[in-house]
Image (cartoon, rainbow, N blue to C red; front, top):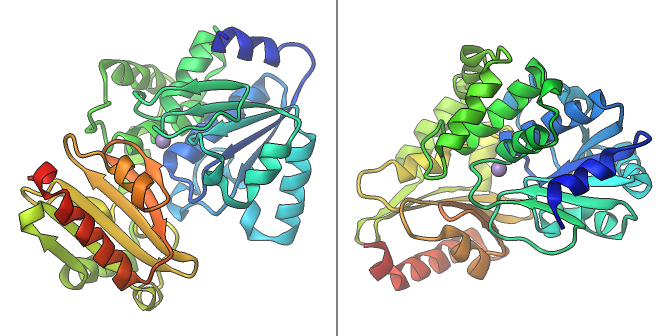
Length: 338
Ligand SMILES: [Mn+2]
């Protein structure tokens, strides 16, 4: 099936009840792409609800339309409303994920929903639950795919400053400011077109990258001086955050965003990890440079997945056991890493 004509046809006719949802712990691409798509569909007179399984980081609270996002986990009434909207929807867009286990408790409700499901995603791991897959693991961001979709529908004239800023922030963050290998000439062209809608570049970059709380900076200093381990023989570095650390520094959602990149920034390091001890287990972020596939590591050993150079997973072992497992794996893969 040709994806664009199929989506075009589905959106024709009377206004549809549409739910847009994104992966848990939404990042700027998941949230920005969802809000950009929502704003576009609203302009086309559809009834659109945006549902996030869990809360988004504070540094995204300026995104246009963000106050209307229903955070499922936040309250019983949000849960009830989310389930109702999902059950009644004509269409469900799954943005920035292609595996239903990425939306936790919403997995079953979305799976069971009578709605037509449309995936818009660029993660490597996917399952076939949707009628329509706009899926391209080469894409730099889901926001790039949303832009492509709107343009392919012949409706770029619907894009306005709010939509452009929502998509722009998804692209700058997922490409780590245009530095990842998938930052193609096409990505730059898309961003150039978005900028023509008067995207406020300095404002957005300030909000995203220079919006640290003092706590967050003090925590960064602590993490780098007390919680960083380097395995030079394996070209690997990792940071661990114990549950009491998060408490002591009063960390908010998103405060550990980017921390793993400090480990990766060390000269010669090719694999970096961040282990966060949380109530529901150990959350793991993995980053690499070059041809070491962290998505495979995440998928095979840590119930996760993602991209070649950026992935996430979890572990139900203790923090110490998880780290021991990780070190063992890394040592076994030493020949690939060095
Ligand atoms: Mn993304």
